[in-house]
Structures are given as structure tokens and as C-alpha cells.
Length: 130
Image (tube, rainbow, N blue to C red):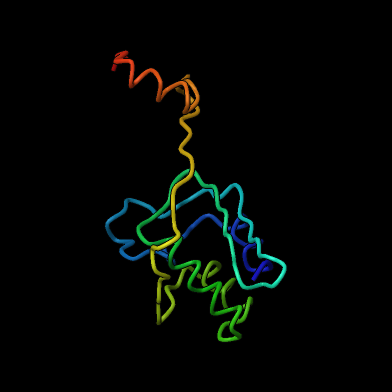
């Protein structure tokens, strides 16, 4: 599974792992970081991924494929083949959304204060120019 996660930063077209790729002008996502962590018993997983954008269902579909690899139902080579050929898998079983959360959004061209300062300013009623 970790080997497959390591492939994610090497490709940039994720249309094969999208619920509805036709609704997008393009399916290019620049994944800058992808890592998989597990506890010592290998009973819990944490998947971390950073990208400039995400497509509909992309993370849930990727995680579903990673679990198939972990269960021996899909090879790492087949996983990479989807990324290389941009062909959508015949069966897509996204993982449930429970446990999935967005932890951070960064806008590189906006000089916004960090979250705690920003929250304090909002509760104090400070307005920001649009």
C-alpha cells in the first residue's frame, strides 16, 4: 500500500479516480505529498495527501483502491496502470466518508492570519475587505 501511495506524486491526471470527470475542464491535480501511516498492529491507517485541488470522490476512490491492494485484490502495477493510461477502473468502490476530513486549506497569495488568530478576529466582529 505504501508503495502505491508513493506513486501518487509521480502522476498528475486523476480522471481515472474521479466520480464524474466529464464535469471538469481538466482532471489535472498536482499532488505534492502523499503518505500512509499505520499503528504498530497495522489495524488503523491514516492517509495524508496534499494537492493543489481534489476531484469529486478522488480521495475516497484512491483509498478504496489502496485497501484493495492491502487485501491482495489489486496489484501495485495495476494501480499504477490506471494512473499511466488514465483509464477508469471497471469497479470503483469509494470508502465511506466517516473519518475523512479536510485539515487545512492554504491560499498562497493571501496573507491571512493563522486559524486561531482568524477565529478570534471573527468572534470580535472584525470585518475583512473583499
